[in-house]
Length: 265
Image (cartoon, rainbow, N blue to C red; front, side):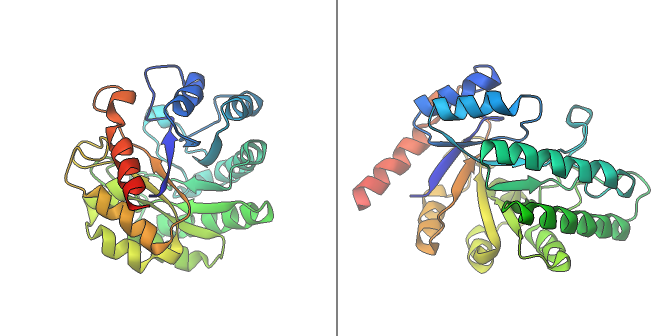
């Protein structure tokens, strides 16, 4: 069975953010991830991680004004300076929190920005970020997102992100594969994971429709968990879903996966 990390942006919303570390540990998680650490002091989050014996496996680069609908700025040529400053800020947090990898959400091109210019800007910004992170021994990831939840997002499919990775040409840039996003955009989950497994550095999950916990929709997660084991995936799977009710009530899928794993041992 894969290892699972609770996404504290999505899970345990029953309590304030800084209390979610303890809630995740109490629920049996040994690792967490979240979208952004920047509203909080790194020292305060490090204390919560240490007190609850948790690893932080992922957070994102700064992504612009999230509350205003921005979903990254790497595609925007007039925000390159801001992007580069954000890389530095992300590195500071990653080093303070012992985070091994950072994800880049590339964003939504503004009206009038042609696709070729947006893609060229993404390539340049990712090359800068991959080089800066490599010097600190931190991996950079890039994530395609579905166009239903995020209309206009610049990278929507696995092939889109992989083409950009090829253009960047860095050995420190990998694919973040979100099962939910890719089920909505392209399906063929098992075939895609197998084909591009060597280039996938992090996996996230949610079921479809609804982006709720595994077992609530059409995705056959027991099969995918077995596939990840067979392929030798040794990273964490980020649980980035919206609980239908409360987070603890929705963790039956995790207990079932643990029971299946124990039965096979």
